[in-house]
Image (cartoon, rainbow, N blue to C red; front, side):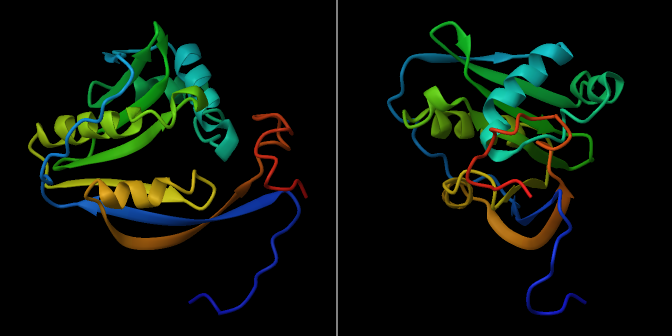
Length: 196
């Protein structure tokens, strides 16, 4: 049991409050917003360099580092698995986001990563991409579609997931090494989270 109150973290460690959300049935469809003209590209067996570059561009402000810490082989085992579907919205000829759906657990789909590069936010592309995620997930024989987000993610993420039809079901505390101190991300990343 975790005691109420404050818990000191050693220097170099960060803590997040993680909220897990799920859908147990396909929600009513939401209309696609009027967005800049974009398309969606399935990245079948993408290169690790392409994946890490897009992952870093989207996630650096939120200290996404899990996939950056993996070896090339570990990452390839995930992103080349046929049960993992990776998509990139394309705007003006450039990949501007990441949608990763993991069907490796029978009967489930995890929305592993969902995000846009900074220049693509605020134009309705996120809603358009979520509509595709829901469509693709529930096209398979699943009973559960789930995702988690945390306090270091964009503050709009949690309400967006709830509006999309996900229901919170669990809260966790995540403690991890600050990826800026190991060089996975530059020290300038996430300037609103001080280095200790």
